[in-house]
Length: 108
Image 1 (cartoon, helix red, strand yellow):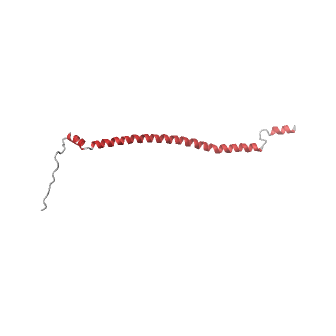
Image 2 (cartoon, rainbow, N blue to C red):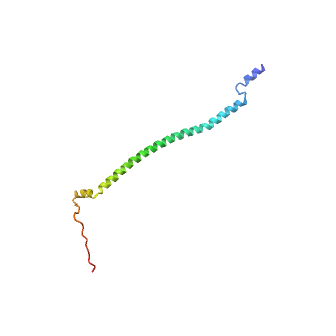
Image 3 (cartoon, rainbow, N blue to C red):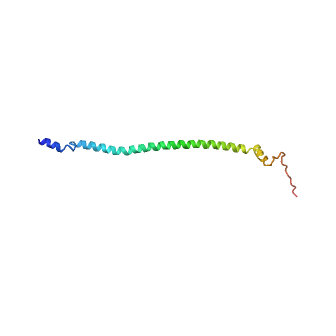
């Protein structure tokens, strides 16, 4: 009977010190793995956000590039001599049809 009463008293505590060591080993592993898991989740979300932002910037860059090309084309067309002559003719100025004459001055 003394053996049975002894087992009843120790039923709440592990009989084997190896079980305590295994439990502590699992707790240490969880404490080590949890921050790594949190960092992994944060890193993957941050990467997804960065890729989305990069794609948006790339799209904006393509739009700005096409706008730049169209503006350069407009400026090139607007600066041609015939185009300028048409615009100035509506304001009353005409293009010179005769070439300019060189004035020579005598050195006296």
